[in-house]
Image (tube, rainbow, N blue to C red; front, side, top):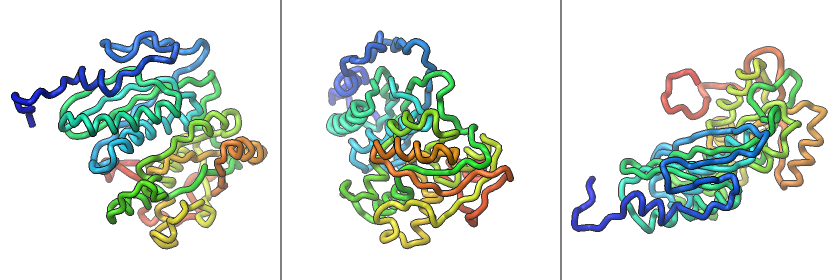
Length: 323
């Protein structure tokens, strides 16, 4: 598609200036949006935690979803990686690919993106706008003191496995969307389109969790990553899974449990916690009004026990590959 020459379409620079340039309030932003590069000044003595995610229409979210929700979600899934590492958010970059320059759509998209920037205390410091299939790439930068980052590789035999909040809600929301639900007040649809990255929890878990990962691809898939990185096995207790409100009513008991195990997109934190630290972990998360549920434990013997896999797995962009 080309813009009709008779239509005065805004340039990418005008779009960036109109919708994405904001005054830099972070003193670490030496030079922000508008130049070839942004210039940043990390805090002395901190390590940088950097992650990137790409969200593609009709792969990661419905193209017809509210644009503010698309903007929120694109940033939230990247922020969730910082949460899993116990990193404090500082800056983000965004690349935006659009089929057309719809100013009203962009205004709503930017409003959703900037609203989450505000609440997460992260600054958008640069990016790019180009034409093509709707897709959003977000790179986030966070800071963490040396030696305090939460990693996937620290779990040990005897550690408890626990998850924040509830599981399966995002998959239930996807099914609700596919069934025609459009009201964002619907709790399952909100879980899918407006996930909440557990940033404060990640900070609170420093020095307590021995390993952590965010649940993006589904509990079974992401637990597999943690177990492999740590060189341990585990036993799950499926009956202990904290299911999202309304999930059983929407999907039935087995469907709800399957959604919790392999539905993906929950963006909660899966933790390995030494038993002697469980009480303090719960206390810190309770201060954030965030429940924590023990769902199993780590063991020396490799493999996963307690749940029949039966082909269950997590999201894969290229099925057949090793997850």
